[in-house]
Amino acid sequence: MVLMKFQDFCNKMATKESFKEQQPFDVVVPDRYKVAVNAMIENLRSRRNAFNIIDTPPYIVKVFDKDYITILDKKLEGGDVPTGVIYGLSKGIYGLDPIDLNESQQAIIKVLTTYICIQN
Image 1: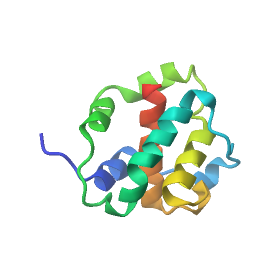
Image 2 (image 1 turned 45 degrees about the vertical axis):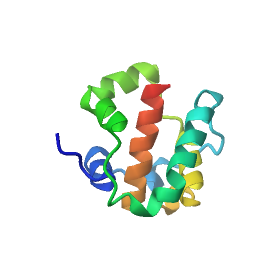
Image 3 (image 1 turned 90 degrees about the horizontal axis):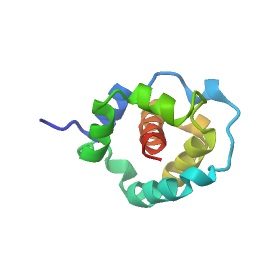
Image 4 (image 1 turned 60 degrees about the vertical axis):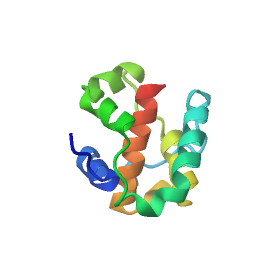
């Protein structure tokens, strides 16, 4: 299987809905997700300008190969994705509020948020 570049993968998988339509954002990462969010920030902050040239990590592809919407719905018990996760990743990786991210940056954050919510 040929891996897609991470930015291309995120652009393909993410919804087109803008974060500007999802306000307001909780600025606190829920305890359940803090360790995962901090690890993701630590792992990706220094590579944020290379998302268009690095391959999509296989562990992320694997999650999205499954019926991730069904899995996500079960994990969130019918609720919405915690906006604190989106906010934490946006600030941690890009140093910006979610509404200030461009479309490509939002796609990255959406995929990472989905991955974290499915895994936790």
